[in-house]
Figure 1 (spheres, rainbow, N blue to C red):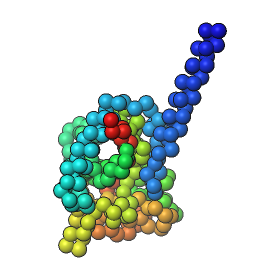
Figure 2 (figure 1 turned 120 degrees about the vertical axis):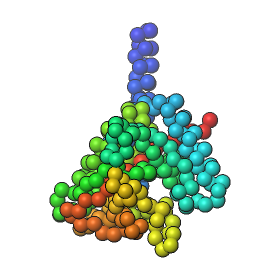
Figure 3 (figure 1 turned 45 degrees about the horizontal axis):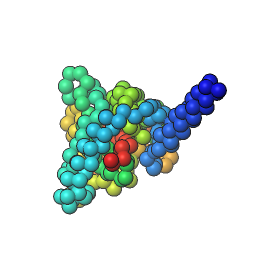
Figure 4 (figure 1 turned 90 degrees about the vertical axis):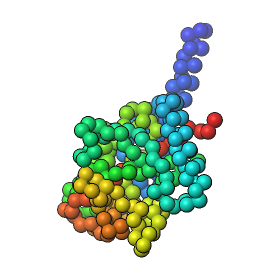
Length: 232
């Protein structure tokens, strides 16, 4: 009888684990693609609460200033580490601008351009899914974050032209707030294609979006969407 009871309890626990993994794997940011299923890892409550508190404090201070779209007014948080050229000698802590917080989800954009690549290996498609740049992002995700950090991340991608229009305001006729530095100073960086197209958008050092062609190399500025612990 005791053995039968233990089997029932074990089955209930196993079902709970599968259900939680299915939920975590189903979370994604509209218009983007989940690049890894590692988000099904068990969450570290201490890490998640620490990051959640930082984001809530940052965003609350930001909202209080009454300048909702001036991203330069937002503070940044540190999450992950990555050895990228021009910023130190080993793995440097990654700094993220908090673009948006909606419920228990936050959108974070790398403060810096962290790499450089062609958009794709072939000129027959500039789709983001399966592209050379998406593979770079996937590798970055696996290398830059610990297992506990990856458990918080619902999606790792790059911003789209729609994101640029949403999060950055015009200053002197340009989106100057979207500028970011790389290893060589202010850098162009690719934007994620939301539809299949023969070219891909990039954000230029002129603070506006232009069409990039096959064979051109521009920077990569990662964006992550993370799950926040519920407010106690």
